[in-house]
Picture 1 (cartoon, helix red, strand yellow):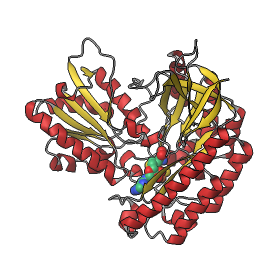
Picture 2: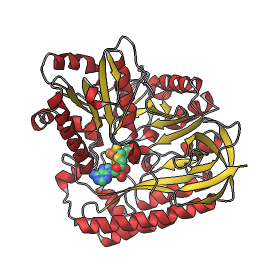
Picture 3: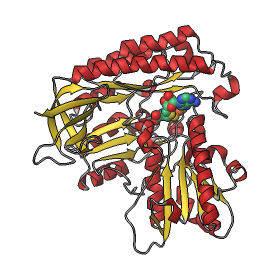
Picture 4: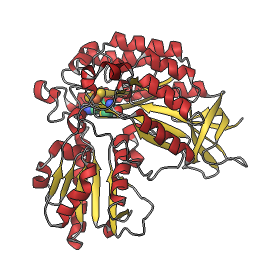
Length: 479
Ligand code: SAH
Ligand code: F3S
């Protein structure tokens, strides 16, 4: 299973973020993040807001005046992890009663004031669109009251705030381009916890990309729940586009245009993007990928199921056949493109036959990577309200195992196909196993590890020949 991108970077779960200290700041913030890349990116915005309001970050929770946890609600397990962590903070608070604890992100939005009732330790609850209000909320908390702001916004994109890059490698960075999601997949809490879909002003996106380039960054991932749906017409919710003026509609910027603008603005940088939704992925995006060398040949294209009837119950807006013809188009326009997926095993009412459809779709596409999950019933979602979570746990598990095993087989085939060829690699750091080796990725997102040679450094683009591979890593040497 691939674990380098998106939400499933297990090694990063619970990572605390450290920021350069400002001398005038006297208080200490311990900030911990769970869940998807968007949460890690949001934490950088939170750290930057609080650094202007008296807080320096620390990685020692014992010495913190304020602990903030940026939380995830996507599956039940994600919420359990956070609840357990709150128990640990509670123990700390016994020794340090003046310490405050706040919950940010999707769990804050989903549970709202209930959090304050259920978890006595929590002083502060703040949803993903309310981070600008943090300084005010903290004043209330300091006066001894609990504080909460879970208002979702029509237009907040934090466009003018420059996130402070935390805990990164100085080479790869994420740039948020959309917030929220309008898709209403029936299994998903995101539309409820992150609100309606909004796009960010392209000018501020380009500024951020150029700023990153100047600071020595070499790769940008444009981030959103549904990046292909990006549409800038002067601000506001995507669903209100129809109400915009003729002028606004005529001069609107879509994702294919944004991608090309970024590729041209920072020609020396690699561009990636995540996540794509099949029904919004336009051929124009594929053409832009083929046209610009600096756009990486990799698409994360979640499908969730290979069965049209399950896709319908999931409200995914496309059939199996439509997805497969999109895949054909990808390989036609970008023959060397790598693909990855998200898949859910055991959704409501899933039959054995529908599960077999998932396996046969995977056989057709032969994905490079996959992120695979057993269905987890989430309170408040359309599936929870209208369908029955009726696939027994052991069947979910068995189907998930079959999906994972097949994915591993395909990943190994893909990796073997990269062997014997020369690839451009961006050096991101030392290999974890051996300091004498560099770690980097090829355009298709596969990891390459190779011996260091004189004169090479982190941030360099180098040509590397893949000589061998394990199930998840290419082993090479500089060509
Ligand atoms: N569009 C988002 C999707 C976020 S959720 C993005 O940017 O990636 C990430 C993945 O979690 C989904 O694609 C789906 O495969 C999985 N997921 C979402 N809700 C789930 C649930 N209730 N149970 C199991 N997996 C779920
Ligand atoms: Fe969730 Fe579907 Fe949006 S998976 S984030 S509702 S695209």
